[in-house]
Length: 314
Image (cartoon, rainbow, N blue to C red; front, side):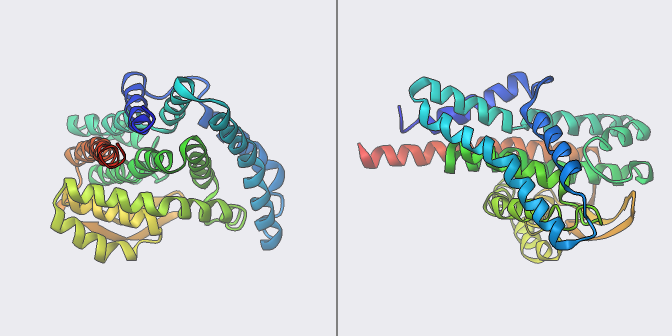
């Protein structure tokens, strides 16, 4: 039973996610985000002073993560048996967002299929930070496809990875760091130094999961193209983790992503990723399917590893 516990927890967490999705009220990640907003407003008082801002960011990360990490470690030590298994499953469920990812992606793909560009723009603005009003149909589809691929790494595979590696503390720490990076990891005057610690921590914690995600996309899609895109295009991306994930994913789907993108601050010129086909509603749905099939592949991998260990130690 103990040997198969990680597999059981992963299955339960994905089942909870499939049946219930994300909690509509009192989601702990949302509560943590609100707390982080309050801390940032109180402590990020000198964005023009690099060292002071950097130290304030470091202290803020510690202040926000240390108590929750301590609680996660205490739960892991204090509970055992079925109670620990249930606590792990619930924690992993709250960190996962496979159903939510699919819902957000389909909310963009469906109006695109119906030719309702304005509705598609409104829906994509909920999941990306781009200036949605300036996006054409292909731009909306590309933004949503990129979001599915990148968030598949952050919200699905990284959560599974850190649970398998470090249990509840690993899942909790990654979700907190990833949330702080999403809130503070901007290269603008306010967050350039204050958010640097959170951004670097997220890069470190996401390095291995991102490459396992890229490998997952490669195995489930057009392998040769995905490998070529990963090797040649990912190094051009400004994020070491997102580049690998999106290049491999775009290659696996043979869809063209990246390129110039409008943001509120202006047009950002990004490297082109992927293959030859223009993004459309079908590419958004294909990206959702790629992430979903990847989750099944990971469960299969955990099952095989568990079975091999069982045969060795029995």
